[in-house]
Structure formats: structure tokens, C-alpha cells
Amino acid sequence: MLFQNKKQTTVSLKNETVFLCLFFNVLLSYNNIKKARNVYKIFTTKVCLINFKQPYMKAIGNSNFEKKKHFSYYIITILFLFSFKVSAQNDTIFFDKDWKESNKIKASYYRIKPLKIKTKDAVGYKIKNIDSLFTITDYYLKNNKIQFQGYSQDYYGDYLVGEAKWYGENENTIAVREFNYKENCCEPKFKFPEWPIFYLNYSIADKSILTTGLEFCLECRDKNKLFFGAGYGITNSYNGKYYGLPDIHLSYNTENFLFVKAGSSSKNAYVVSGLTLLNSIDLGFGYSFPYNKEKIPTYQGFTTSITFRISKNKNVYTDLKIM
Image (cartoon, rainbow, N blue to C red):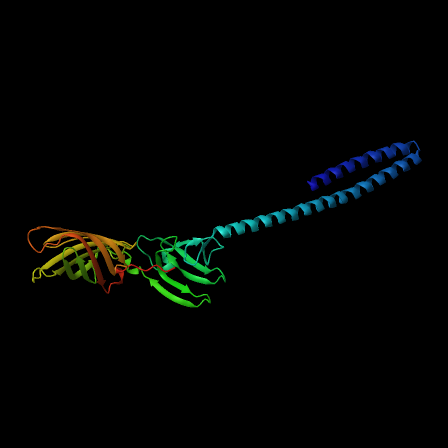
């Protein structure tokens, strides 16, 4: 816009100059030199004013433009800092001392919002049915030092994958654990278990039975486990006599510390459910149905049981979640 005004002013000035020169010639032709001189003075004064006005107005325009420019930069900077602060707050998750989500005032730890990354880039190998993982990074709130670093299948960091590290408040490494799923890549859905599980079960109804045998983990790669067991039990005394009972059963143990179990012997069938401690100990309550109430041994009524499992297969046991 400044360039166009300058051009228009120059054209106008040229037109006035031509007109005044013609007028001088007319006046001089009539020998009116005095009038010509007066007109010339007026013309030169007008030209000076125009030449002075142009840079002055341009300077004022430039000054206003610079002020507006600086003001715009100031507003943009404030908006950027405000949006950055809001974004940083939304990208931070706070936890209290018990690792329950809370606000910043009550928090002892905080986590940067987990981002997704390709599984192979995170742990160095592919995992079947897992295309990406979440990066989990936790910090101590009081000194902003790192507290945990690892990868997880889920957003909340409950199911860790690959190498996980825990740090003290002085950034010293206090624990390292490898959650290795490499063997799970491209395996068939069913694979005969490599290591059997030794189990010992004690149950009480109208009589007590002590049973021992072997279990096989049919779904050990999953978080929920399915056990198939076969064993042999001995009842307590029936007038000085002891009876042996074969046992087969299925037990479904979940990651939420619950289980349900159904089984049978040659004399009875039973159903039991209850709590499991990492699949190493099951505490259950249920009911036993005798096949024949008139022939001993009869094992009937409400029953309680406790089962112990021992195995070299680490996948048998549920991982303890540590945050």
C-alpha cells in the first residue's frame, strides 16, 4: 500500500509541474515576470511540503506497523506458553504413594502420557498378535528423577513386555526384570506342556481326602491359566479301613486371583471355587456329589480344599504386578 501511494503522489506531482510550466510560458509571453516569480515560489514551497510529508507519513506508518508487529509477537508468545502449559498438564498422570491415580497436590509420582511404539522397535523382536506397545516412564515428583522405565501391552502399564527397570530416588538401579515373550512368536495354538506340575490337594467333606498327582498347563502363555490334572487320593479311616480314589480335574485360574475347579473320582463328582495365590496355592469352597450313597466310601456335602502346586515352568505362576 505504501508503494502505491508513492506512485500516485509522483504522477500527481508531474502533472502539476507540466501545468505550471505551461502557465509560466503564458505569463512570460505577456512580460509578467513578477507574477511568474510569485507562482514559482508557491510551486517550490508546495514541492518541499510534499517531499517532507511523504517520509514523515511513511515514518509514522512504519512506527505504527512496528508497534502492531511487536504487540502481535507478544500475544502469540503468551498464547503459546499458555497452550504449552495446558498440554503439559494433560500429558501428565499423577499417582499417590500407593500408586493410585490422584491430583498433583497428593501425588508422590507422575507419569508422562504413554505413547505407542512398534513392538519390534521397543523390544527387538516381534510378538504374535501384539503390533505395538506403550512406553511407560514414571518419575519421583519431589525431584523429577526417573522411577521406572519399560514397555507395556496396555495403556496403564499392567502387562509389561521386554526389559523393565526400577530406580531409586538417587537414580540408582534397584531392580531389573525381563518379561520375555520371544518364545511366543509364531507358535501353534496348542503345544504339549514341557514341564508337568506336581500338585498336592487336601479336602474335607463328611470325610477327608489327601490327593497327589500331576497337572498340565494347557493355556500357560495366557494371563488366565487352564490346568488339567490326574492323581490318586486316600481317604481317612472307615472303621480302620482306608480307601483309594483316582482323581481327574480341570482348574481354570484367572489373573484376578480367582479360580473354579471341577473334577471326579470313581465315587464322587465335585465343584470348587475360591481364591488363588499366584496359582501356587488355591483355597476353595464347594460341594461334592456321591455316585452311590449306600456304598462306602461316600464323600458328600459341602467341602473345603487347599491345593499346592510346584513346577519348574515359570509360566504356571501369575506375575506379581509391581509399579
